[in-house]
Image 1: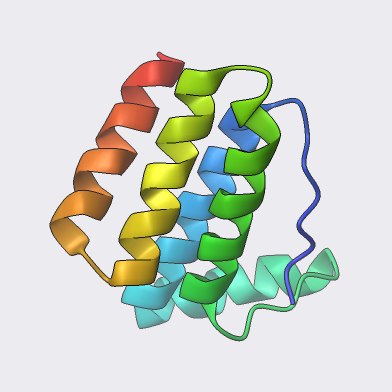
Image 2 (image 1 turned 90 degrees about the vertical axis):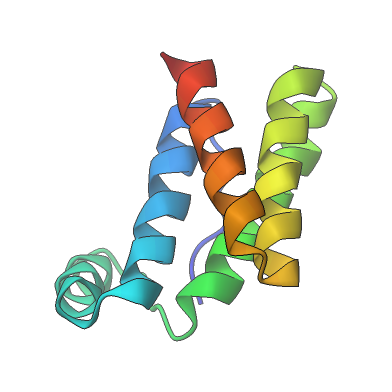
Length: 100
């Protein structure tokens, strides 16, 4: 299980979600990321579920502080839950541009 620690740094959470999504898509990267997570006591069994949980937790956290940021994380969570790859790509791009 991935530690669902919420930090005040949304960019950190965004990077973790992206790494979990990529982990689920590429086997070589999956093994590399797992080795990194295991050295930091993170255990990743189902990266998409972990990414969903992390996105949802951050959506709940940020909704009260910055509504736009909360909605961006919520869109990622919805896309992951529904398995909608187009919506996921769009949500990731929007959250990326929010941070730059």
